[in-house]
Image (cartoon, rainbow over all chains, first blue to last red; front, side, top):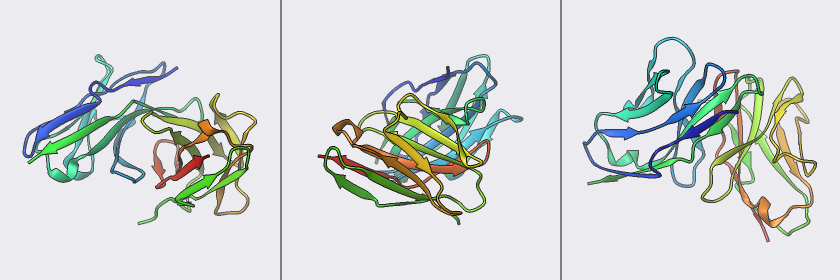
Length: 114
Length: 111
């Protein structure tokens, strides 16, 4: 079975500061990993994904994430936070042996202070 | 840009009633999914659908639930005899084998 752990259910940063949202996973097969963002009262928007190849992946809105197999991590970063980044962020792992089902972490709510 | 759409955005129903949640996936996608998110909890997988049949389902997806692709565009989730604990946001998603795009969700409230 796969699982995802997101450390920190709430993260607060100042505008312009580095954003670091942590994600660790467990998977019995090489993982496909995803970050989604959810703005209030909206659906889940795909930020970025890792399937194969380059371990540093870039996504929308200036976010990037690095797949580290040895650490079973896929942390999300952004060099400089913007007020519009305030949202809930979900890390997920896909099981392509089980209908591509996504297993999600518990989510991290990012707050950005002016 | 193509997107997944869901109707209705909010459904209120009485316990024991049947509801049908509707989704229009992105047109060239082959894989379809339903997830739910109970308020304050994780997003949970319900079912995946490919080639006109269920490819995987979770233990949540029991006989109370069913899915259907009645025509070339719609993908529906039927919940029979709703219970209070079925109250949640239900998300439809569609995609290829290695990415999924989510709709805005249907908030189901069972009273």
